[in-house]
Picture 1 (cartoon, rainbow, N blue to C red):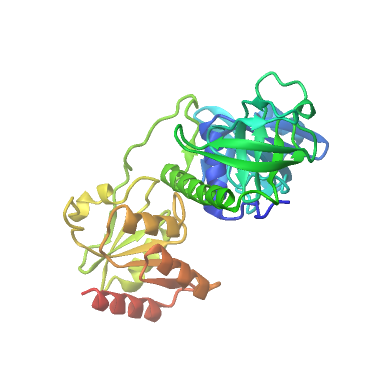
Picture 2 (spheres, helix red, strand yellow):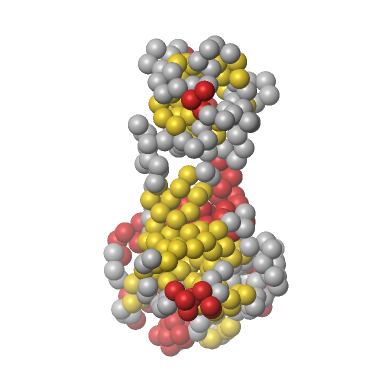
Length: 390
């Protein structure tokens, strides 16, 4: 029936789902053995979801780190399922909470549906019932081959208006002044809507117009989703004790005071200290353990202001960060903060060619292998990069 894969397997797309749940103060369902329950999404972080699981519930379920849980959720009217690991518990702003790992795949449960695009609000869509009476319906979801239509409020039984395989005509009102008339046939029922397939004999011009609108609507929604996405994570807006952090409060630590200066973004000081020990005779090293906010406002101590990037000549982003991923941080630094400096992403040797391509796509100059750490290779890469941008 459906023409597209409705599963979500891109990390950013999966995180967007949990951020929407978090913003909407919604819940997910967890199942562990014979136990099942609903738990509110308190926060979303780059590698985990924090749920309102009390210590009593955790004890009753006998949850331990590494336990496999089945997670079910509804995003924009569509049900998804995943298998996740329980990672531990703690408190978030004084609330007891449980941590589960970010799933790698959200598997769509209703893949037969015409639901490639679900708008934020249903669209008016009058339709003709099986007695040719015009009724006021609302289009809930859309696909290449059809749409899902909800009946007027108060309808007791969908089959009273349209039966399976019944033909109908709908008038989709995409704006107050624009509308499309489509010939459809009932392909399936959900609990609250019909799945209406575009008829084989439908007007080709109208079908083409509909599919063009659908492509543009999906693109616009994707742009809005990206604009709302918070790479550093998100907390529920009504979480008790929640504090908004507008700017990061961290400051860079100057480990080796020498020019040219390399700024290293990493979690903790272990990697920057190791790098400084290896290259400190030739390069300066400043370390910054950055939160989710922008980079540039934290760098005043290094002479960075609204016009220049001060003493810094190169930025190295370690693959282990306090918040978000190295690729996300690189992309934000280049695109949102217009950083003109060369950026290197540093990480492990595993799949280094693939990581190099991804680093380049994010705006980095190169991907630097630092695990295992080869001093000469690191020095050579720094020399070549600074000469290239000198």
